[in-house]
Length: 356
Ligand SMILES: O=P(O)(O)OC[C@H]1O[C@H](O[C@H]2O[C@H](CO)[C@@H](O)[C@H](O)[C@H]2O)[C@H](O)[C@@H](O)[C@@H]1O
Image 1 (cartoon, helix red, strand yellow):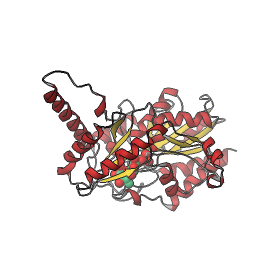
Image 2 (tube, rainbow, N blue to C red; image 1 turned 135 degrees about the horizontal axis):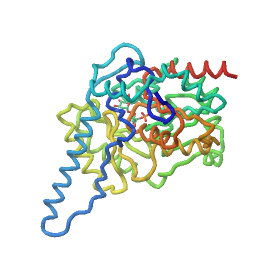
Image 3 (cartoon, helix red, strand yellow; image 1 turned 135 degrees about the vertical axis):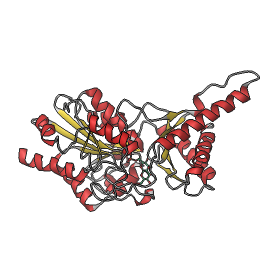
């Protein structure tokens, strides 16, 4: 199988399962609605048409919530027990489109001889298992050691939907770059960050959605208020985007969640909704995503020479598709769907140690 086109590969098809519907082939984009972006038809039918449009938007959101969340719980610890039940469509897709990254490891590193590898890692579902409480999605010491080792040998970055601060608290490693808020908050160097002057900190930061900060705070408060009566719903302010979690909400209330999110967003035409794994992500309508963040990081780390640099991106969610797409378009590197991440990272380090 030709691995040179940036298509996603998986680290072990048998251990796959956790990301399941969170990952789609790279040509499928995350669901997105922009409630403020439709224009209301003028005239007498305005209210009826508007209501119809609202219904379409709510139903669209609800469908996206259902399709991205076929299973309530899958606390798979990578490559270990608790494999969720098989999804025939997903299994067929991975079997035909995703070669195993571990089985293809030799081929990957053979193509990397004499070139520089850069490693990009998603956080939730990739470095940490998916759990019911987002505040408890901690990384295991084994995974942390693997990531630390990788960062010692390769330029490496975490690219997450979480706030940059939160993901740094989870990962606790200074050796990497961090891109939080789905790439809208990039810090190109975290070493000694807290000891830096404000000016030095600014120089390391790239925040393309900075002007949306007040709007995000406002929408976060509104979402918190309107969802406070829904059992299990929770709101996570990720600085430049907001997560509306419905993992712990009874399915009968999902429509209400969709309706309330849609209603709140009517007042914020500058924001849109995408969906992740049992989460609705409210984010600015700007042309920026994890893929753009990877491009930015490659550029600012002096790694934009696609002839000599092999970017490897490991992710599990729909938002990671944007990064896979960038690698495919650059015709370089590998997008890897998550499963045995530690094993893959450790193999990479072993290879690097033996190849120098
Ligand atoms: O880009 P990522 O690092 O993958 O972040 C995406 C979202 O991840 C988190 O939510 C997901 O993981 C939670 C903990 O396991 C789980 O409870 C939730 O259902 C998942 O959607 C995070 O809480 C979100 O803010 C991130 O946007």
